[in-house]
Image (cartoon, rainbow, N blue to C red; front, top):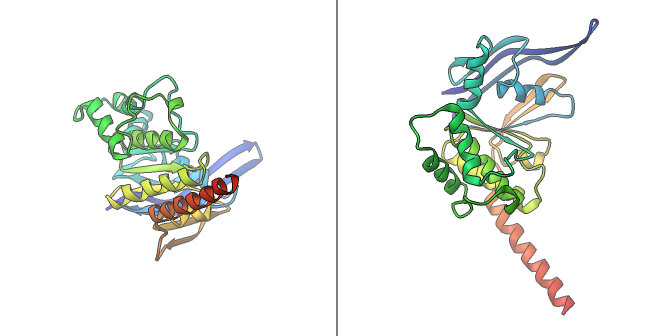
Length: 256
């Protein structure tokens, strides 16, 4: 089943009467349910523009974009907002959690906006926090959580409406190595259970944890390849912790 179907998508920005930036120059992009795709490219390649169109934050100047069977290019503003809320789960680099709101309340927010009637809000939010390993942190405020825990809350919030796919924009950019591996391990676990994930990143090391890498340059897709063997984030995390334990143990022994 095609979750995403883009055909001939172009995006132009007019900066002045005679200056037009062609951010996307005719992109064809398909994604099936259950894929884990990384989108890469240098600065100015068009990956942020592609992310904005994928996330229904912007519309193409030309071309066709269907999300989960809904043709978005001709949608009115209300339908566009509904698509964003119900069909896409956003995960950002900066977490974007409400500072004075508990983890549980942060995860509940999209349910209030979507007015879902098929979920009991607190039960659904609690289920998502348990799924990301934060069942014992539901009443904590963001400043009482580590960076990795805050991103887990953001991922739970992204999943709470059962979206067609999760769109993650540099989701580990503010995290250290251990927290990065934890988040990538979580993404792989969610993907293994069928969740579709598209991750925008500039780091090849992170793309190695996905199943497919799409690379843009000058507003066009120049590479679209399936990764034959993706790295195992949980295994890499275990190795990192073992090495860190050895190193810190040696430091402590030397200090003694």
